[in-house]
Length: 277
Image: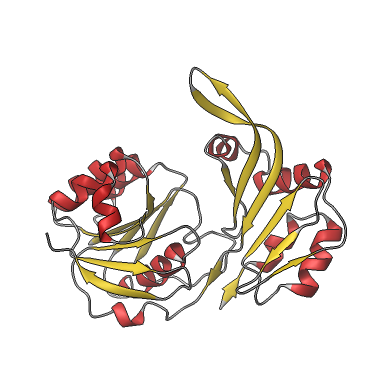
């Protein structure tokens, strides 16, 4: 198991970092900070609470250290998250700024959820015998990104894989995560644009993306699939029935774009289904 632990501690106020270092190095999954309440350390089977409450300055410190005041981070904050160094994802809640019916950012952050990025080499080995395109399904927090990372790593030992890593979470520069020998990564680019870009410029055998959320993402995947490229992707859905019921994913089902589905449960276990209509 690998984790950019130093990078995680570096975005936290000193008093929180000291407690986290002593308590959660090996088992921390999420750190939740709520203004006026004690920090919550979420483990696999329990939560632990620190004795002191967070203030607004503590939350602002985390946001500023994680974003490094970058324009890209400000843009993704309008979608409710920031990706911190090391691939740790920071979810944001508070007072949203609205303009012309769309969210432009979070004016005052009141709650933060930090998902700790960890790498577990070998967890995708039982999928080594699967051929064709693979879609990973699961609810939030079920480990889709972690499983996709290991699957990409295995495949890129023998095939050229291009990863469109929009959020910088699959193979972050500061994460220290091992990668395959034939892996190319495009970071900070929307999936709908990046898929076409790497298809034209990198000549991949396989393209991998995390979290399909929009119809444009699906259209880009279909275009790549028509070019004979193998695809790896993740989506929020509990199972195949749930996937079929969501209009945004309908084209992925009707075109038979994926050959196999890996369905993850909340306990991080998973099983395989054929994508047959």
